[in-house]
Length: 404
Image 1: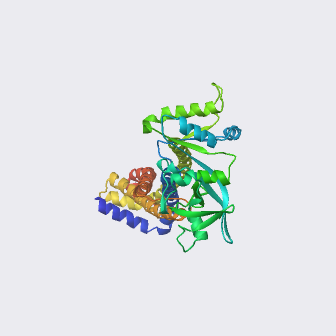
Image 2: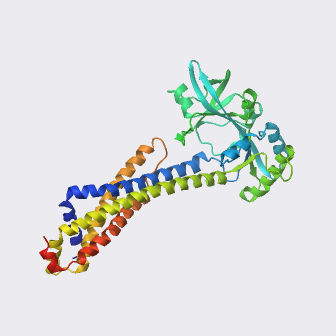
């Protein structure tokens, strides 16, 4: 019996028991749907976080009050630190010989007004003008502020899409004016739309010169100093050590004491995110694996029932010359085909779930994920069919023909 004939016979057997086949598919569909949707969401989030949220260039080091905190105890200790200040920035800028560039940012939340309209809890970030050499800032329209505007604390701003949509729904915002704490700010740029990720709205933001922000609003958390080494990636260690020494000296930190500030790099943020996403992926894959195991058990049970029901047919086939391996191949084909059909349904379901989730979180369905889903389903069906196929092949033709 060649492959095409084997496939046709197996498909016909499944058609004769549509209800049973349909119910059997459910377990495999759920398992594969979970696999495809989880892979799509994790992959989309990884790409977005690593390329958009983590917007530091790889050769930039950040010195801040908090840094990366991995436990509640670390957070409590960090709250007791002194903030990084503008004076720290001035000293590092003047004395760091291994720094190709020294910049800073400060963040706090505030309200943006335009007449009676108000946007609350806007993340207002003050930047030095040279951060474009350290951060990946994408502008849809307009420009970034200049060193001269930063030096003179100019009242200019780059806004996110939420501010544009709320205050200038049908207008070009560039050149128009918004108000923050009574100060008029001229809009000079519009940030590209980023969306909402991990509960953080990346479009409800405003960028202003750090000098202006420090003049009209300050934060207890201070600022973050960003440095870029003269030697690029090769100079990271030297530059980090030099800035550490400067900041420890300014704080008169004892030699044996820990740093009274946090140090963050793009690689550290990416590493932390990868560990988080890997843990989430492992948990979801465990759940998916359990679903597929349950689906495989259901397929195996149904195939055993099919062997019992078709015992006379098996005996007749053997009497007409069918070999044991032909019988085994037929039942393996049926179980694999049944599971693969379930896999196809799971791929469609997983893609639809990913499409729905993409309205909230970034998600992307790749060809590789579809192939993984189909291959996983086929292998599950093949393994589930081994025992029933072996049982069918072991039947004696005479005894099988007598079976009622």
